[in-house]
Length: 353
Image 1 (tube, one colour):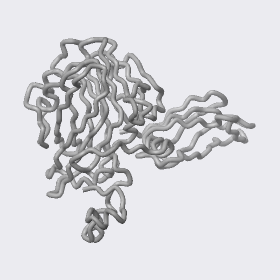
Image 2: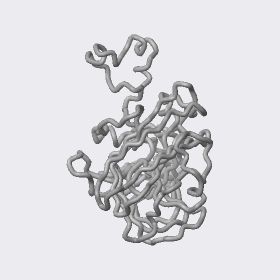
Image 3: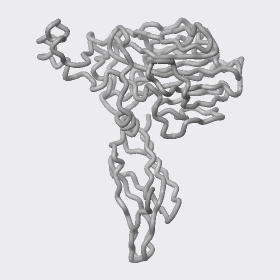
Image 4: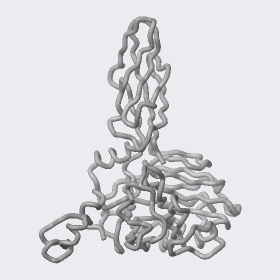
């Protein structure tokens, strides 16, 4: 099991043993007990709200939280200040149905997902006889009571496990804790790819709900993934909030791991960043009229992978943007004219899963 920290008490009472030290159990733990990034929904670099969402694979507001949607209603996703009282949170993620669909087609579905890199999951020891159990805990609120589904989906091996939770009281914050057994089949890839998805289902058609809920790890069958899920898209009065999402090793939830703002932001910057070149004063280059002028800049935080970068020059000119150098830096080409050119541009850098 995961060990949060080495203390004299832990050594005295036997929580940490000599075999732990010898085997590297402690050394191999993640620096953070919470595998989820931005579980308190405090970072929203893309903006605090996106409306009229009808498409799949978008990151509408809170960093690292993707919306998966196939023709099941129209939605607004926002970073909300509605939070559970006295728990230390200042923000939540809100899903608001703005166009209802009370009769989903068979293939319709909507869920909120965080994608997790395989190299951040190696200490779960998935695919071995020592696979770790994990617990997902979170605060949730909705006007629509009933059964909801939380799913772990192994992208590397097409395996899944789902657990249901119940929102019992309308418009009331409730804390949920769901424990998932370790999976002894199928290891996660030790790389920067999307190995595991944590899914919070909000609605589905029969393709994902006509079977028997897979409450143990199995080769994934769509019909068994979200059985019993309510349809949050059945009314434009429906809304759903979540915050304090924690995914950790062990069979019980611990208190939410609050991180300093700069640490949480830097973890998000690995995947997405807006860089304002010349924000306070334009960045100047001088040319002789015969050669292209290039400026090499760094991201600051190494990206997950070579990112996709787009730009909009608010002054000067930006002829091209080259990110093929590596995941740490890029070139901007400001043209081959003579004289001095000032550049002021927003560059959006996207290395998300």
